[in-house]
Structure formats: structure tokens, C-alpha cells
Image (cartoon, helix red, strand yellow):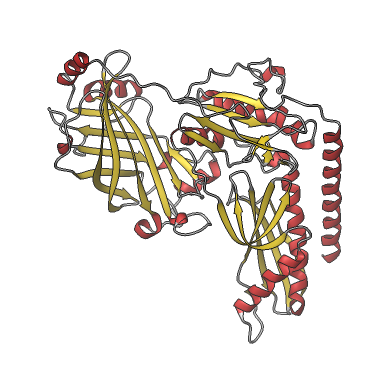
Amino acid sequence: MRRNERCKAAVRRLWYYACVLAGALACGCAGGGAQSGEPVDAHAAGGADVPAEETVASPPLDPERGQLIVFMPRGGSVMARDFRYELSPRLIRAAHAEGIATVQLSGLDNESLPAEVTIRPLCVFQNQYGRSIYQGRTTTPDRLRTFLRVARWVPQEPIPLVRRDVALIERGRARIALAIKITPLAGSPPPGFRAEDFVDRARDAVFTGFERARPVAEAALSRSDRTFHLDFYPYRSPEGKLFVSTALFSQFHCEIPVAENKTEPHEGDFDAAEEVFRRAAAALEMEAYLAMRNPRGGDGFDPVPDTVPVCTWEDYYLPLPARKAETAPAASEAAGAAAGFPSKWQTSGEQFLCFQFAPPLDLYAGEAKSVQAAFDLGADLDLSRLRAEVRVATAQATMGDQVLDGVIAGSAVLAAQEFPEATFRNVSVAADAPRLRLGEEVTLDVEGDFTLKGISRRLTTRAAFEARLDSAGAPRLNVRGSFVVPLKEHFGIDGPEGPSPERDTLHIYYRLSLAAAESAARAGAERGEVQGSADGR
């Protein structure tokens, strides 16, 4: 088994250096693209960066819907070829499906780039509200599409992800953290075994087993930096042999490993455990390097050289789009419309409700695809008399990845089969809440019962209400806001790996569009939907 292990390690190492050499040769022969300040929209400019059969026109830039900026890998590298002709067209189509404009940027070797661009390919979304960097695999266009829908309304905050007690690889501008997990010793521990001492010695051996990664007490990672999770599973046989199985996970997928070695684990005498862990660490570090070079796995990238000058987004001719001007209704129009506004409202048209963990863990985000709400404001649109109910189908919560969606719907998180709905019903509003007037946004705190997995907890949401007329002159009620759910404390749900309390804090953002109950019900019946009412009936 040891011989097979050494042979496989040698083959993987040769393959790694072959990839590096091929990439270096390709980059040396690479041609240039657009210079800084001359971005190339491959679709609008005739499809220079994608195959002809994939060339489609980009939607026009809308300040609210925004644009997706794709920083392409350089020239003819291994990464560039696969991304350019196989992965990029799918990501572009996902953006166009959301009505989002796209621009693909290639560049010269000496061009300047914004500081946030540490790797290529890199997808960046921006609109009038802010700028966000896609943290996900390039092979999952559905996840990119979910990211775009969330980032459109909830831009990222510039908060670094701090990893502690990790190994760090620096490649040009890029920083890659290797997070280590060593499970408790399984099997037959020896007499006098001290579990904590064993794990400490194993961790030290792992760090010394790395060839290029260096241990650091703390690493502050940007949105475009990367993390791989290295798991070690030690087992001691009754005969005193140590076996260490391993698995490598991407930061973007905690369920399916990038690589694993469980059938032929690293082995040796238990008294030489440090040596076994060093060999296991060296092999797993090599797997991480291979993942960084593999475009088809979705975790691959080309680092931006640290010799590339830094510029601002404005210098790169990519400032945030200017905000749309709001148009208020005329006073006479407002007075007439307010008098005829309905008291009962139901969701109609596209709704938005997303969930994400607190920054910097907000890469763990998704949306609810089925949201229904009913509001009753009384005949005089008095917000102090508000009765509201919002219902979300838990089985239709998605992160844009089928495997992760299955985890969300499972018993450990939402238990969607047993509890098909999550609900929010308000119980009180400030007594001095004003009447709603056409074209005026009113913000107030709404207290209510949030029910998840059959457990109800009292929460408060900060909500903004606005009554408007749509393009056909029909009344609409727009409601937007957010609230925070302490997942572990209130519902016993464990969040992703990361710092606390961020991993236990789920933020929920919503933008609801409601029409008069009669017309909404009529439209819903035509689509086969079933609407509720504000009093729960």
C-alpha cells in the first residue's frame, strides 16, 4: 500500500508541474486584450472572447439591474482556454437571463487593475447600490444567478474574512488559506492516550509537512482570495498501526470533496504518527494546487501578478452606475389616487426574499423562490392598524446548487418535508404610525411572530412602505426591509464554519410588491396560485 501511495503521489506531482509548465508557456505566447480604460464587451463588440455560436447581445446597462464584469484569464493559459470557450458563455447567459448587462475584460501584461482583482477569472457585479464580488465556482451558473439576484439589492460590505491558525499560500496578489481539521482518533487508542496532545502534535506535523504553505496565526482574506479545507481522519488499529485518510474541500462546497483518499490512507506505526501526518499533509497540499490549476473543477484561477499596478475602479472606467432619478406623482394625482386605494393587498408579480449569513460569511446566501404575502391597512391606509402575513415555501429555498439545496431542505436545517412553510405574522405596530400617502415612503418597526420548523419567536423588522401607481395607473404597495434571525439560539440550527456570532446570525432581506387583493387573486388564479389573507385564513 505504501508503494502505491508513493507512485500515485509521484504521478500527481508530475501532472502538477506539467500544468504549471504548460500555463507558463501559454502565457509567454499570449496576446493582449483591451488596455485599461478600453474594456471589451465581447457580446456587443462581435464576440471576440467567445465562440461565434455563443455570441448574443448584452442587455443595455440599467443602473438598478446593473452589470456583470468578467475579468478574463490571460491569453492562452490552461485556465484561459477552458474558461473562455466553455465556462464564460454559461455565466454570461445567466446574467442576461436576469436582464443584467455584461462586459468581458482581457488585458495587457502591464495593465493596472483594481486592488480587489487578485485572481482571474473573477466575476464582479455592480449597480447603483454598490459592488459585489462573486464567491462561488465558475462551473455553477445557477449559483452565479442567485448571487446576482441577491447582490442587486444587498451589496457586499468591505469586511475581510479572518481565518485563524491556518496555512497560507501567496501567489502574486492572491492569498490562499489552507484550513486544517483533524478529527478525534478513531479505533483503538493506546493506554494513557491523551486526545488533545495527539491533535496538537498532529497539527504541528501537518504544518511542517507543507512544502509551500506557511503557518500563520491569522490571515485576513479579501473577497477574491480563496480557502481550501483540509480534513484528516486518523484511525489506530488494534495492532498499533496508524491510518490517516484525507479529504480536500472547496470553500464553495462543504458537502462534496474536491479530492479524497479513504481507500488507500497514509499509514505507519502509531509511534511515528508525526511522519504519517507530514506525508498526508504534503499530498493534500498537492491536491489543493491541482484544484487551483483545474478550470473544470470550478475552483481554478490564474493569480494576478503582484507586479501589476493598482488603480481605482474610476481609473479603470468602471465607476458605479449613477442612480436613477425618482419621479414623484403630481399632488392632484396623488390626492385622487389615495382616495381610491384599496385596504387589502396581496403579492402580485416578482417577489424578492433572500437570506445570507452575517459578513464576512455572506458568501453563504440564497433566496426563497416562493413568497406570498397578504396585508390589510384598513380603509384609511392607517399603518397603525396593519395586519400582515408572509409565507415562504421552505422546499423552494435555493443557493443555486442542487446538493446544497438538498442540505438546506434537510432535517438539519429547514426540515422542509415536515415543516413546508416559514411564516411571519405581525402583532404590533407603533400606535403613532402615520397614514400611507401616495409616493411617500414610510419606515417603521413592525413586531411579529416568526415561525420556522414549528418554533415561533418574537422578532422585529424594520420595514419601509410605499404606495405607488404602476405604468397602467393601478395602485401598488411596495414593502421592503430586513430582520435578523439568531439561528442557533432560537432554532438550534448550526451555521457554516466560521467566526461567531457571524456563523449563527442569519440576515433576511425582502422586497415585496403587492396589488389590490381582488386583482392579485385574479392574476394568481390564472397562474394556479393560492393566496391567503392577512388574518391567516
